[in-house]
Length: 431
Ligand code: EPZ
Image 1: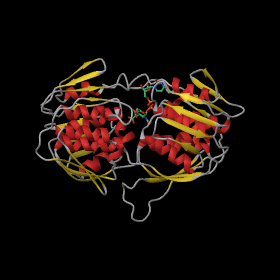
Image 2 (image 1 turned 180 degrees about the vertical axis):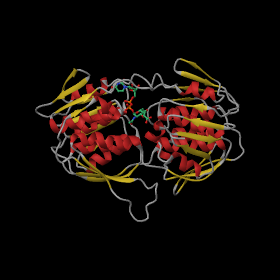
Image 3 (image 1 turned 120 degrees about the vertical axis):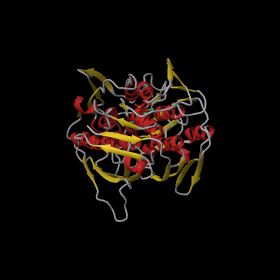
Image 4 (image 1 turned 90 degrees about the horizontal axis):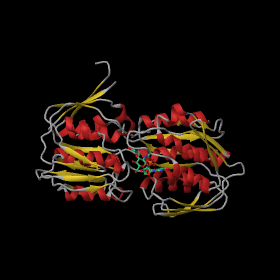
């Protein structure tokens, strides 16, 4: 298995191109099931999760192809993927695939909306919390689906098609909002989604569905209204920039000090985290081509954060921020309100010298910690990248194991950081 070695202590300077968002690309790819026509997605990140989802969609009969590079495209330009679901050949999503990527459970919605049936494995356990799918199933039931659980599978049926309804989520759920949007787009009549997730990735999915012919209003707000249509067409859509990758590299620069342009990044997708970084003494400048992050000699100040649904501070940046706060010149606190078990990185950060104590859903971080390199590993991709950030500031070498987690969500991580002066390399499994 590959590992990443990081020699700490180098400042970062240069340009980091931001890739298309993983968490937008995945639901967009799944939406291709809704139409017989071709959906072309541009700026898709090169990630193992994208490759795996292509295989999963292929099982259902979706022809997925990666187009060749166009003239002038650099390695980081993102890929163009075409997805054609002319004929759905199988409405079952098996355990072996769904258990490898939770988001693939979302195929239940377009399969049900288009074919009137779906048999999709329950995703099973997860490293960051229990992550039930009760609200997703509730949403489909509100649209007239009959749902049963059979031998670990969700069996959803709507023999006469889905019909519009009111879905009032008791808790904000990104996946729940994605599947409600997809299902309601092909349901008969009007659907109102209340307490909808306002994440930019939800609005991006809605934008794409609208290009395919869906009638959706209010995406990006907490109430979305969808008038169902009988069929959807093909479309071309450009995946929006990855705000979590953006925030991760912003924290890396804050950690080491330096001056880096995050090319293609948008401040409006990540205002809360940029506000927090400014409070921590980091300079955040909006420029024509992206967002520039600067910290030159100024101390890092401690800031407390609470994770919240968008537009609040994202849970997907919590681990990275915690790593950063170990080097602040005072103590801080992180309150995780989205997932109940998302502190698995704490013990690994401790191996690098971090002093963090846990009390339920709160982590208390001692600042001014001296970090020293060590071998570490993590259980999910955001936790893994928090170890990379800590390694960039640690004395000596840090070896991050289980790099496959990073490959799920960070495109060309070691190249992007290496080009800005980080001492970082991938060591392939054989060595
Ligand atoms: C999405 O997961 C993201 N995944 C996650 O990113 C992200 O952390 C999360 O949203 C929150 O922002 C993708 O987009 C592929 P939720 P999702 O439904 O949709 C509870 C990453 O690292 N809940 O918004 O699965 C749930 O347990 C990943 O890229 C129910 O109780 O998250 C959680 O506490 C990790 N019942 C809360 O809602 C349900 O039926 C929010 O989860 C569904 C969710």
